[in-house]
Image (cartoon, rainbow, N blue to C red; front, top):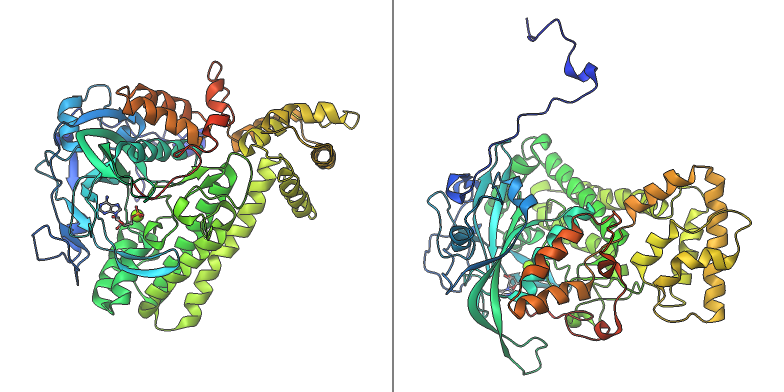
Length: 552
Ligand code: AMP
Ligand code: MG
């Protein structure tokens, strides 16, 4: 008999609850975790072991150890990320933990390496890039058998460091730590951040590349992801005509991370490309939903798992403006501004598709697979706007409603997050007057609107209210749904900066406090209104709040 079990009892599925596996054991020390090293065990590595900058051929990675730092100190820890690898944030010893996470000690089970990849930067092929300051320690395997790569960013030079120092400054590390976790709690696919360690060392940076280098405190972030493979890992061997390495990487990626696609064949490579396209589309729709601007969508910063990766000069829309980019390096071309992200993602996917094409052999199926991006993006974007506007579903004519809204938001500088959150509270009754409708969103205005702009927003709210009434749904239900889509708390640029200012002055506690607010971005959190407030005037032009450079 194929089935066994207690015949007196119906299967759990019929009892209407899922079977929960017992809570996995939790550990206090990294040494107690199980580590695997499939990347280095499966893929060809660089035979040269000297840690010197160079071109690395026919290898997916170089083995390299982190460079120890003067005084590693644990500044922040994500208990949720720790739980993913069965690490108990409550009982771990911060001193021993910071030694490993600062790069001063590698446990016996870890086989650290830096990955070799290339990429298109700002539209041009840049050749070999690679992990110039990131070192993957290994894959922590949790009690459920899931693997999480642990990667230190800022852990010292590697063969891929080119002319830079392999280090990271505290400000950019605080930003990466907080935003990774904030994005996760918002429901956006992302790499995670386990912890932030201060190095006790200074790093020299010329923040705006204007001849004013300064000493800044250094830090290391430990990031986590099932894989850090990027489009660029595939582009580099393809650009070199190294089909053996391209195939080995593709087999590794598909077998490990997309096992349902079966063995690597021309068909499954196309199916994989389509799936990466679908995941990328979903990720970008989330970015557009929450007002996130990645800032440097080079192909080396695009994950094949469809995760938001490499938090550098990213930013959050304050006043709604599709042309806004946080990245000073991008201020001229605005290639990576908010509104361009959907197009850029497709451009990047096309570069990824070109890299995979030699494994397929003909162009048409690759082109067709690339179509999965738009096929996913368009309906997902419609569903996203319907949810943000509190519509039961997307109907003909709703496109005009959205376009009219986006036009009206441009007439007066309007905080995107506060506007959408306030929209749930706008009365929809036919006899409500304009003042009553405008009241819940008035706080979103950065300046007093002109009578014309005020009129335009009121007119739009009238049309929107009528559309919502036509759905005939209970108000409370609609508002609860809107509040699950439109966050109240996002990692506003100035909020990250306030945590950085305090940390640089010696008090890291605001990092943990900010993370705590970002844990529940859709909930009202009484007493924490300051974290939902629109950008104060002092932050409008302050570096770190309104503009960021790649210098980090
Ligand atoms: P990013 O703009 O952060 O995606 O980085 C682009 C490339 O520059 C990657 O290969 C990075 O590893 C490398 N890189 C950035 N900053 C540093 C640094 N401080 N030291 C070494 N390599 C770096
Ligand atoms: Mg990068």
